[in-house]
Each structure stands twice: as C-alpha cells, then as structure tokens.
Length: 314
Image 1 (tube, one colour):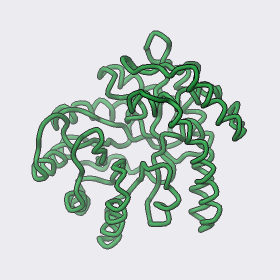
Image 2 (tube, helix red, strand yellow; image 1 turned 30 degrees about the vertical axis):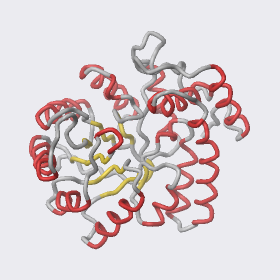
Image 3 (spheres, one colour; image 1 turned 90 degrees about the vertical axis):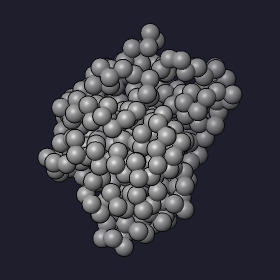
C-alpha cells in the first residue's frame, strides 16, 4: 500500500447522509448544503458512502457522483474517507481506485459480503485490498450488516503490519472495543480507532478512542464537536452533559415503529434534517419505506423541545 495520503482521521467524522429528490435521484444541491453545514460546524473529517449514506442502494456510478459532490463541497477543508462496500476483494479494489481518483483520502471496507470466509481468509482479503490501492485502508467492523465480527488478533495483526491504518467500530460490542483500545495502546498505537456507538462517545473517548463517526451528526453536528472539545481539554463533566443532551435528541430514532432498521435510523435522521432545513426532502433510497406522519410529528416535537428548529447558525 502506498501512503500517498498522509491525512489522518480523528475527532468527529460524520458518515454523510445522501439526500434524495422525491423521484429517488441524488439531491446534489442538498448534499452540498449538508457538507457545508458539517464542515462549518467544526467536524474534523467526513465519511462518505457508509451505512448512513445508504451506499448499498446505489450503483457504482452513483457512488462516484455522490463522492464527487462531497469532495467538491468540502474543498479540501477536511479529509474524506470513503466506503468501498463490495462483495469481494477484487471488486473492492476496483471501487476503491475510482473513489480515490474522485477525491477520497482513504478507503474503508468490511470483511467480504455474501461469501463465507474464515478469519485467515478475511486476513488475506484485507491484505489484498491494501496491496491493490494507493491510499490508506481502514477496516469497518459492522457485524449487524456483514454477519461476522472482526476479531481482536486479526485487527492488531493487520495494524502492526501496516495493512490497515484504523478501525471504524460499529460492532456495538463495547467490551470488545475496550479490549481493542487496550491492545492498540500496548502495541504503540498502530491504529486509529473510531467508535460508531454514538450514545456513549464520552465514555469511549475517556477510554482512549481517537474519535467518533456519529450518524446523528447529520442532524446536530455541533453537539458532537462540543463533546470532542470538552474531552480534549479533559472536562469530562462537560463532555457527559453534552452526551446526555445528544442522547435526548437521539430519541428521534425510536419514534418510527414497525419499519426496517434502515427506515428507522436513516429515516429519522432525514426527517429531522429536513425539519431543520439542512436538506430539502426526507426521501430514502428504494425500497425503504417512508416514515408515517405521526412519527414525523413526534420527531419534530423532540427537536422543538430541545430548541433545534430550525438549524442554528454556527
């Protein structure tokens, strides 16, 4: 792997949502506005084409177009890591090369999808991807989607050998993440470790995480930036207070009922983003079902109670 990009990822690195027009095509104007909102809020990087970005629902060309808009709107102000989420190593390499050429500073990918692989084969997978791309590679640990967990020894071996630069942990396994933090520290910190568990960011930063990838930052980025700043200066009381405020707002994701995980999480984010004026429409990628009016009304009520309507100027 070449280290052509030396930009690192720490702090608040939101997974950028993908606004859509009512006909399901990408709303590039709203996407530009969203990126401007995130960067102006003080985030430290952007994660393009992740789960919150609904990347699985788009074609290869659409993904490139989405990243091109994100990179253009970011205009070099923050680094961009892009998700190359594909079935196999060869397809990931092919996708990654297009994403790097379009403006990604690093690439993040998962264990192989659909195929049934052993830990040794997953190790070979990451090493092949890293060898095939000219950018830093990150591992994305998201067993709820991939159906296999990236083990501690696997990640540390890949980190010590310089195969991966970091891990985006969306496992929901806080014990496992704490063990990874300890092992990484003992090894001299070869990996940057970002948590995707957005309701316990204060605890994970106290434990030594390098940052957070919070989907909810698409709705309210400034709170996460304040939390990071408080943690950086060691003001854990302020960090906890900010986390508790974020968690009250995060109740929006529990308002939709009887829908899929994608509809519930991303749907709630998009409904709130539309209510705050960050994007123009709350459309989700087909065939994800829309939220009903009652859920949207409850989401508006939570935002209003916390004085989050409309978006406040930075």
